[in-house]
Amino acid sequence: MTTTHALIVDSEESAWDALEKLLSNDNIGAVEFDGWPTIGLKFEGDRYFATLPTGLMRQISEVQDAFNRCYAQIAYQKDARSIKRSERDELELVFGVKKGSTELRADATGLLDRLGDAMKKPSTANIAALTLVSLAIIICGSNAICKVSDNSRAKEEKRLDLLAKAVEKAPDLKNATPEFQKIYRDIVASASDADRITIGSHTLSVEEISTVAKSQRAGGQRIDFSGIYKISAIRRFSKHCMVDVTLPSGEKVRARIIFDRFSDNDVSEVLKAVAKNATVRLGITAMKHEDGYSSARITSIGG
Image (cartoon, rainbow, N blue to C red; front, side, top):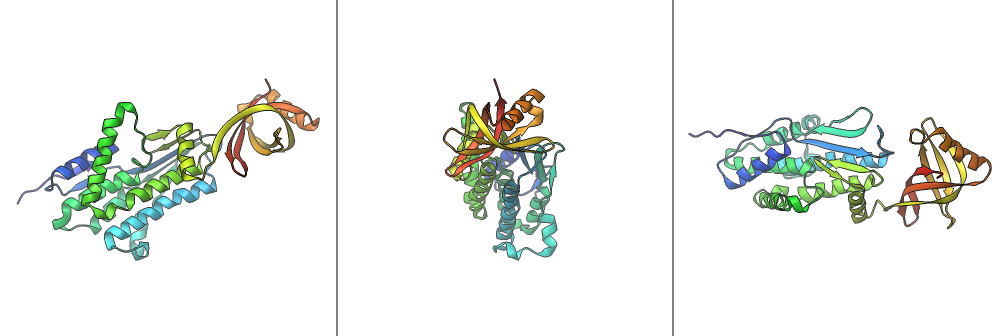
């Protein structure tokens, strides 16, 4: 009797290495996860400083729902209603939030260990290991947003090919890739006003966020504009104020002024303009939709 050592997966890089080995050697049938995969999401921008909008929360919760569906399909060939009550606690994702930021991280190793127990059959050990490693790559968002730069094109294309071959050998994964890709793209679209979004090890710029949001038909178009405007109303809060800005076209934009981004003189200039029914020069960033603007913020005052 021959024994094979388990492949240790402790990072995204080692997961891709393990996937390649599993595809090339049917005799390998054991895999162990050590501190990975984790589901990591980070949002940077004015609305994402230790805060999480409810629309974004709803989209993030879809990650859990999708994993439950994958688990039920692979373990029972049924829908998520087949999951036992005794299993749900182990399948539950618990997101930790980094203090003072909107950075979330959840350990998914327990989920895959539970699925591995449900798939333990010696005759299909290689397929089980292949399924687990592929699913780990898929659920952590590693392939959710394809970013193929010139200097990494060959590497990324090879990885996409490996994942496609894994799905061919493990048909239970055929719905997982498009489902998780859609969920992560919906998450990006829900935070389309962010300055940067990081999913796993991949960081998206403003331009890339806008491109994804457009493709999901949910986020609108991010625009920057400046000019001399009239402010019709203002509401003050402890760390910011909301102002209603009237554009030359007659459109209204409700924008946020973050106090610690501006001097007292800048804020006073806005208050005086409101009190005197006068105009003030403003720079504004906003998401433009067919029916108006959202997530607007003031980027400059005066000048």
